[in-house]
Length: 372
Image (cartoon, rainbow, N blue to C red; front, side, top):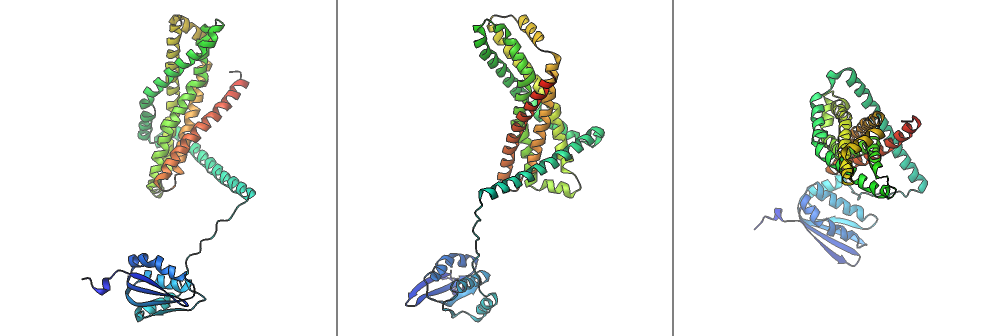
């Protein structure tokens, strides 16, 4: 049979004429106090006087003293008494005094103007952090060009392999399907006017100037930009980034620069790969329409120039800079918790695609005014 000192805590509420009597017994340690807290506090809600019979309490630590103090605070302004408590425990209760339950402040109700102000302030802070990150990245990229020996080339080549070599199959497949679908879709209306020969012109111009770099950048944002954010975000959660800072290493130079350089270098090659695969898909459609390969190549050479190709490749390099930079920035902005890594990954993909589209629109206006 267990010793009386080891009995679990119990709480019994007895209703009397002018209030309630609460009988506490057993061990009021952390587990025991948690077990009897709700029924004990229910006695306070009865109203009237409150008498606590504590003669059966065999052990009382800080949690038990907190319960007794909370009972005293809950019965403030009404008759309250603790009877039969051992002198040592009573001394603790007198030292602690009343323990009032924590007051939870009501959330302030903000008007539309206040909510707009909070949103604008948050956007301003986000813009400030982005500008600071862009400036720091450009500084260290310039330093990497001037002093290549400071770049972690091992990380650069590993990222180059992951973002470039391993992406070749999906880029070839995507490019081939895009060229194939575009050729079929444009051949249907153009055949009505007997102009299906110019399908090659349409597809080649679209791929070299627009769709090749754009689709390659979108694939890079979903495949590599998210990987950058997840890798650096996990390091941030595990406090590895803080450890680098403690050791005197700049995270942007150590983590961001090799990845951004790899993204800039690999994007033109991926765009060119997608262009070639798309043109091959268009060639398949043209041959199915009855045109020999030599006719397709003649139309390709006549419709496009080297400026179309170089302009698309330059856009691809800029897209690589945006995707790599956004992925690394979102990774460094990761907060604590496993969910934060997923949030950073999602934000990197969304932000990367949005910036790609905005930059592509700016390039369209710039090329129009430069007559390119």
